[in-house]
Image 1 (cartoon, rainbow, N blue to C red):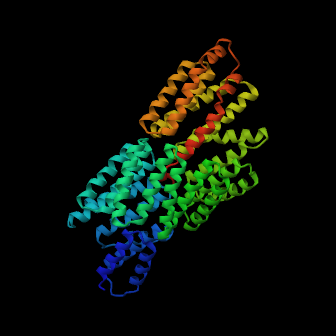
Image 2 (image 1 turned 45 degrees about the vertical axis):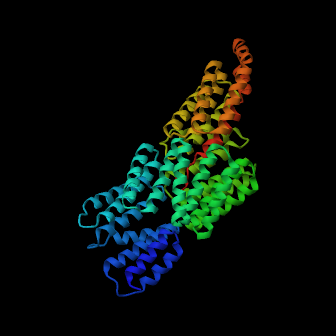
Image 3 (image 1 turned 90 degrees about the horizontal axis):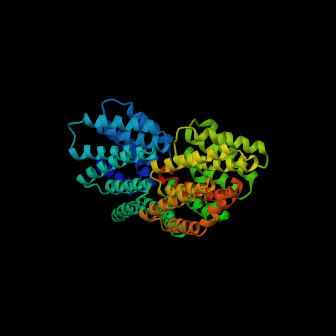
Length: 509
C-alpha cells in the first residue's frame, strides 16, 4: 500500500476515534525509510493526536514541540501542530496559553494562499471551535457561541460531518451553560444523530454524556444515570480511558447526590485510578476533592485526610490555580467539620481568601461562598453579632450575580430561593414572595420541572404561613428564632448540591 493510502487509513481510524489502532498503524509506518520530510511530519502529527486522545499529554507535547521547531515544512502542517498544542494546553487548564496558540494558528492560516480552499477552511473551522471552547471554559459565553457558530458555518461549507457534529455538540454546551436546557438538548440530539450516522463511537459516548448532564440539571437523577451508564459502556467499547474516567466520575457524583455512599466511592475511586494513569493533574485533583467531600459527608475524617494529603502533594508540585482552589476548598471543608473552634476559624480564613480571589471555575467560588455562609450563620448563633448576618446577605447577592453572569439557571433559581429565605429572617415577607415568584418563572422558562415544583411549594407554604411570619415580625422576634424557622442552613445545603452539579462537563474535560 502506498504511503498516502496508509495515511488516509490512519486518519479514518482517528476520525472513528480508534486511537489505539491508529497508533499501532503509525508506529508501523514510522519504520519506513523512504519517506519525505513533509510525510514524516504528517505521520508525527497523527501520532501526536492519537497520544493526545489516549491521554499521553506529555508525549504528545514533545512531538508537536519538535515539529514546530522545524523549518521548510508545509504551513498547513504547522497549523495542525498548533491545533494539537492548543488542545493539550486547554485540557491542562492553561487557557490563556491555549488562546495564544490558537491565535498564532489563525495568523498562520491567513498567510497561506497557495493551498486548497477546503483545506484552509478545515483548519480555520478547527481553530474557531477551539477558540470558542476556551472562551466557554473561561465564562465568556457570547464569544464562545459566536466562534463555534462560525466553525459550524465553515464545517457545513466543506461538508465535514465529524466537524459539524462536534460544533453542534459544543453549541449545546454553550446553551447548557446559559441555562437554556431545552435548546441545549436539541443541539446535543442533532450532534448525536450525526455521530451515530458516521459511526463515531466516542462522539456517541460524548453525546450521551452531555444529554445526561442536561437531564441531571433538570433534576431527574435516575434518567441522567441511565444516559451516563450508556455513555460509559460506549467509552469502554473503544477503550478511551479519559472518557471512561470522566463517566465514572460523573456517575460517582450522581450516586453521591442520591446518598448511595458505597456506589459513589466505588465509581470515584475507579475514576481516580484511571485519571492517575492518564496523568491529568486537574482531573485527578477534582476526583480527589470529590472523594474527600464524600468521606467528610459520610463522617469518615481519617479516610478523607488521606485523600486530602494526596491532593496536597499534587498542589505542591503543580503550580496551577485550579488545583490550588480544589485543595484549599477541600481543606476548609475538613476543618469546618471539626469540633474545635480553632478549626472553624481556620476554615473561615481559607474561605474568605477564596471568595475574594479571581473566579476561575465559578462553581468552586460559589461553593466556597455557600460554605462560608454556613460558618457565618454558626458564628451568629454563638455570638449574636448582627454584622455577621450582613456578610451573609452580601454573599448571597454575590452568588446570585455570579449565577446570572454564568447563565447557570438552576443556581439562579436556588440563589433566589436563598435570598427569599433570608428576606424572611430580615422581616420582609413581601420581598420573599416576590423572589420566589422570580425563581418560579425562571424554572418554568428553563424547563426545570422538579426545581419548579419545589419553588412553587415553597411559595405556597409561605402564603399559608404569611400571618405567622407577619406576627413574628410585629413582635420583633429574635433573629435566632427567625433563622431556625426559615431553615436557612438547610437551604444552603440544597444550594451546595446545585453548585456541585453546575460543575460543567467543560470544566471536567
